[in-house]
Length: 169
Image (tube, rainbow, N blue to C red; front, side, top):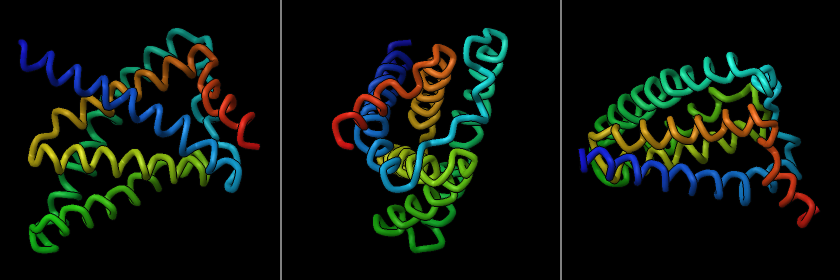
């Protein structure tokens, strides 16, 4: 149980760091050049408890679990082996997987694609650091999705990005 608590704490810290990185540093600057991140696909979550709970579940199943197995557990691992199983091969594999991961978020527009790609790359680095262990990336991704869905439900998904944009634009 103590080992699981350690994984959960690390995942929570990584998730918070991803939010700080994306909402304070990446998204505001991307939006200046590529337009606003488009979250209209999930706008029906705002204030709707049943949709919120459904998307929390889907965020864990498809985001946290399935995307991590596909992009980190399979794509990175297979490409790293194909490229020679060196540290550089693993890094190149993480870059390639993050491009695919970013593109999977095309519905969010160019800013969303790039932001998701950067987040995917960081999740890839977490996987590489814990080679062959998907627990931390799965938990980090799931918690990140929970935080994102909660902010969308509360109508607060842009509060940090908009605050930063006031200062830089």
